[in-house]
Each structure stands twice: as structure tokens, then as C-alpha cells.
Image 1 (cartoon, rainbow, N blue to C red):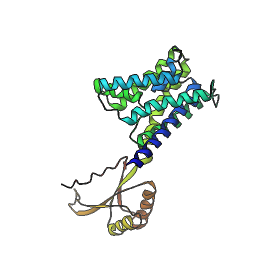
Image 2: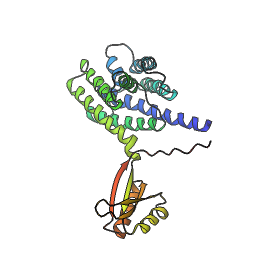
Image 3: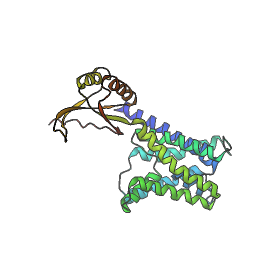
Image 4: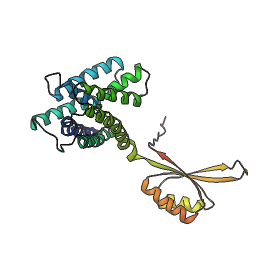
Length: 281
């Protein structure tokens, strides 16, 4: 239990520090507010004489308190930990690299680097059931009180933050910020869901025994046999269903093409698989 706890927080710490690095090394020098709590802190730093890290920390604390009041105790210890560690990481970088300038001297490249690195960081946090707070808290408040879907609420909040940068940055920066917010959301979804996508393959073939044997003994994957009835001729057939990863899918399709080129195959994308074991009474 302790080992798992320490491993979880070690991974979460790495993800939080990586997010802080993305913000400090790419978003802040580019002067592009890609919709997030830290982006809002960056905009506010133009009017409040405090470092981005301090404003971000105060903002996250305020949002956590607001979230507890308006949404309830849904924000676990991991989210609170990340909400504090990300701005602390930014503060450490601010102390080590004062007056830091862009690594690329190109606003667009900085933004692309930011959404790539922060996408990886968010995927790491998500894998441990954590989030960086900030925008997620705002989205949950909007979800509960405005009856807006969480994904839509997150996108709207992000775009509003990106638009707010018009008070201190030029129109080009604002447009890049809006585009960065949109594509950053897509990239985060890809890292969180796309890398874990599996294929649900359904096969009908007269050579089903050979195909099932290949699935079980060569791919070492599970399979389910269903009895189906054709609506046109009322003929009873069997269908095999299996869930495989990308590499196994290629091997399976190669085998099916060689074994029965006329096999009827349907394929679905699966982003999540859950198994609920039976509880012994």
C-alpha cells in the first residue's frame, strides 16, 4: 500500500513539474495565453506586481475553495497536491532562470512545444487519477450550475481565458492562444485516450475454429463466441469477438486475409475496458 502510494505521488510530482516546465519555458516567453489557470495568471501578472507563480498559486487556492463551496468535496488530495506543485515548480524555475527568454524566438513554435509537453504532462496526471486543478475546477462549476457538459465547459472556459489576453497582448497572440487552446485539448485527449485505444474485432467465417485457435494460442488474447441468425436466410452462424491492441490487430487481420479472404469482419475502436469482479458474499 505504501509502495503504491509513493509510486503514485512520484509519478504525479513528475507530471506536475513537467507541466510547470511547459508553462515557464514555452508559454510564458511566447506571450500566448493558451487557455488554462496558469494562462490567466500570466495575463493578470501584467496588472498585478507579483510573479506568475504566486498569482497562479493564489488563483488555484481560490478556485479550490470556490469549488468546495459550489461543487462539493469532489477534489481529491491528488488534485490539491498538483494545484500547489505546478505553481511552486514555476516559482522554482523563475528563481533559477530570472529574465528567461524564448528558447526558439518563435511564438508559434513555442506554442506548439507548450501544447505538446503539457499534453504529455496532463496524460501522466490523468493516468494517476489526478488533474492540475485550475481550469478543471472552473469546468466542474459550470457543469453543475450551468448544466453544461464537462468537455464543453472546459473548452468554453479555456477560450474565454485565451480571449482575455487581448487586454495585454496583440491580436496575433490572441488568435494563436485560441488555436492553441483548441488543438491543445485535442492533443490531451489523444495522449489520454488515443494511446490506449484497442480494437474490438467481430469475425464471421466458415473457418472460425482456425481463427479462434490463432487468437487464443498465437495472440494469447481472449475471445467470445456468439450464436447469430441471419435476417435474410435465417441461417444460424457463429461470430467470434475479440479485443486486441494495434500490433495484435495487424497480425490478426493478416491471418484472417490468408485463412479466409471472404471472412466478414467488423472493427470498432475501444478507448476503455473495465472488468468488475464478482464480490464474494
